[in-house]
Length: 171
Image 1 (spheres, rainbow, N blue to C red):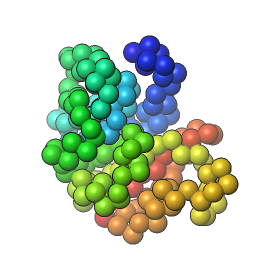
Image 2: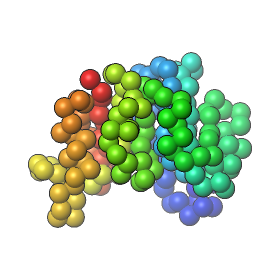
Image 3: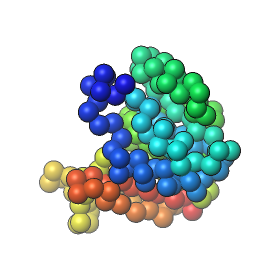
Image 4: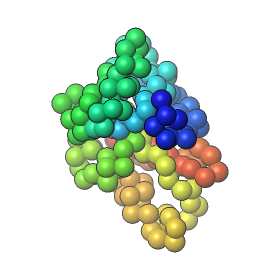
């Protein structure tokens, strides 16, 4: 489905393996903001314990309904909705902010969706060894905010030479 929609690589395999590993430690409900072609949700479901609910939201009707059909026999709840609709299913033990709009959403509203000890995962960062973190010569304020927020224990994990993922665990 992803190749048909023009996605050469949706969630990278390296990121997917990390998502599955993190999901394996979670119970309750985990969520993905931005289903796309369903790759991230599939990785989450692969790792999550059977009793852990996996829910994902996609605004694009073709994508959402295509993924609904694709996951009809799997234990993944796909919503055709803006990712902010996921709030009615919170709190989450893990939330994967895959949609660009979710990554730029007000910090406070995202934090409120996660339970104590819960994880927020953001992907598609350019690896950087400096502080403050840089992206294309400018301070990467999004990454800086998540890594410096004292309400979290956070880490920027390089999953491939050209991409990193932030994992923030709520204290």
